[in-house]
Image 1 (cartoon, rainbow, N blue to C red):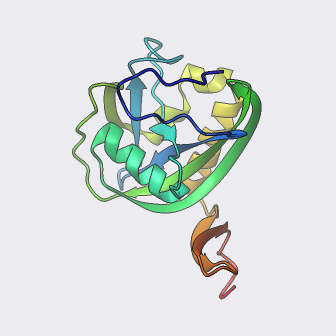
Image 2 (cartoon, rainbow, N blue to C red; image 1 turned 90 degrees about the vertical axis):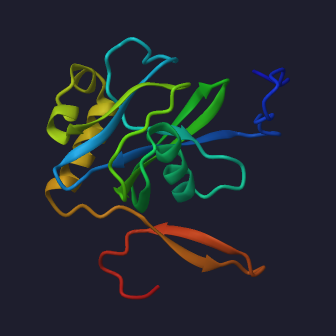
Length: 186
């Protein structure tokens, strides 16, 4: 496990984390095209796989804000958070720590892609069906399941979890994520 930060950039090592929390951003425009990227490094480098923008939630950052930030950083696209569609938990996946990944739906507020040169090889708007039909998606059930959830959301009613501001006993504002479809007031 990495325990000493040697880069000249800001130290982002968690103090004693048990989990790494990340987001995957499903952003679809009115033409049923999804925002996808190809990464310059990591396990997807050079594979030709188009994937949703992803990233790690910073300390003290809400999931919804992390999703908006990561999309903006990687693609230059401004977005509005809609809901969490699904989440995945896996163990011993990141330096023996558990990993939580939240698949978030965002609504685009701009459409002109300005890709980040340091992390992203390419970025584009792709028809949602073409995204789901990639051979990689079909070979890996975790990715194909996410693609199915996103296709279902684009075609039918599928209610995810919306962030609802709530106040804790200590008076702090927090977000409770839940399905609000059939609720009028909680």
